[in-house]
Length: 546
Image 1 (spheres, one colour):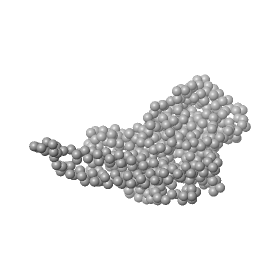
Image 2: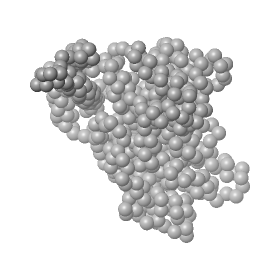
Image 3: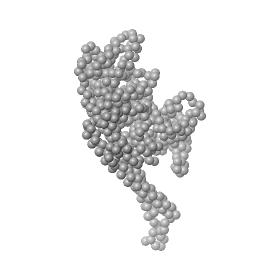
Image 4: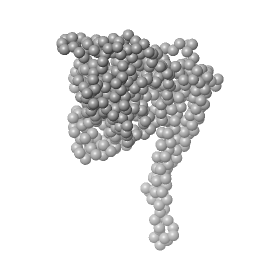
């Protein structure tokens, strides 16, 4: 409970103390592996960039899916050399093992070299990740982003497709390619995803100030969100009040005395009590907004002061190598979870393994379109209650270059800010079905969020409690969360279209605990008696105040 209210009341003690108050053709050769390395060190420029964290009501419409001018990086004959150079002995080792893997004919030897490459690749990738927080050449960027070590590993059509993908995050959504994610974490813009936070030495004043600044920005964002939500509530109340006043002011002329209006009817007199209640709610809403406004102004002062102190301490935060190390290990675990034990763990983008259609590749614009579709069905997928209000908080979404089939939720929220922080989910870039990959991640997020909300009583209360009790009653085997995720996928893909695939009890639990959008409910009520009964039940629950 204390965590949920961390933005209420007193200022954070640490902050208070500090403030004092075109594609290549199919003839592109496999790279010449000999003598490609040099001792030249790559530039390691630090670059801290901010992110647009303004709360929005929905995902933006995609008007640009591809670049009008494709990148020519994949036509560069030195692409492979640039991708591997500057990484020292580990880069040379990657080159040697990859050469053996590609050239051997014996299936057993190929399997051995394949496993050796997978192991050494992650050590190599760590060095590239360190450089991602600065300005890196395109081959290293696309190696991190797509797993593309050499364009010749793809055919001409696939190279052309990847060359047209939009490079920059022009829509300012919290959706990150791997190179962008390492840059954000290394620069201190986003905290590590690891369970245990990276400890910062007390002498590192700059990083300490940055953490305090993040807390102050979090408080500012939360107050803005609360103001926006309360203002919307006030608008609805005012409209309702005006509608009732209009009804009260309607009078029919009295018979025989047309210039005099009739007395209030019994129905109009009943409206008076409604008006009184609306006025009370309007006063409360205004009082809340005054408090939120004061909090926002105080937070703005804190943010401004802390930003000045960060600049005085040395400007942009230097790259935190330990944070990148920790995050790289976390991403490795994310990749393993999205692939599973029996999946394909080879880390490079190659024709041999790449079989996605363009619609199933998890590039940023595709993911945004899928998320918008999901919200049109599951309107509360990314909503979280805070101070008795529902706030839309889209999680950080990391697009990991691998051949996994299922997305995962790594964290439902920051444990130090349960109220307004973003969760974290990982989506494999090359799944068999992008819709399934995305829904499995959101289903995982849904489960973990409900479980954290119920805390010690997760097997008894709320969404997880009701589902767990059904699961045990049916004597089902296996992981209850995995079963829930599969049912969530059916809920969104089948039940939303009136195809009944779920158990009746599960359908009722989901209808109440994870309701469809009103548009979907209105469509379903006439499609089946089962949905019509659930639809009519909404009115009963609303009348009882549930």
